[in-house]
Length: 244
Image (cartoon, rainbow, N blue to C red; front, top):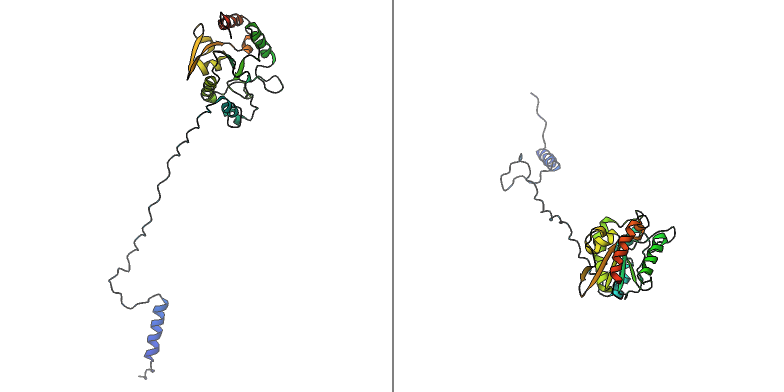
């Protein structure tokens, strides 16, 4: 047998320690028993913040309480029709007149939209003359201040525009009110012009009352001559023994 070579035990121990240190072992003995095969416990996640619920709609600002402030708002950038991108047409005539006439929306006769323009406007002027009035002596108001490309009051705006119109009437406080067309009749009386009760209909508002007549719109009367007699009969209620 040969003689085994001399082994440097110190060097061998240092080499082994260096190997374990490189493998990540940093202590020889742990204080507590450990299951080295167990999976690490999941880290607790912080509670997620509650998801926000639907945002409550902001309450609408009340309509202006004076006629001056109302008219500034009604035909300005805050009006519901302003989003249509069409010109707004303001009320005409004497705001203090005892007779207020409401049309559905402006006419468009190829130029700038205007209240009761063109052929319908000419018939309207004759109607006014027949009851002893003119555009200067009445207060002419649109239910919808803009004319959409459909040529009709938008159904989705009818309720809001009706609320605004009724407020407008209360501020102007006319003694008599003429509603032209179905949309204006629905907005004030809640029924179409051809389904209203006969005679003057009272419209009550805070602080007063108006006597109302609802007739077909002049643009309808242009094509239905037979309906003119019914409209004239209703308009005579306004002038029968009363001064406007």
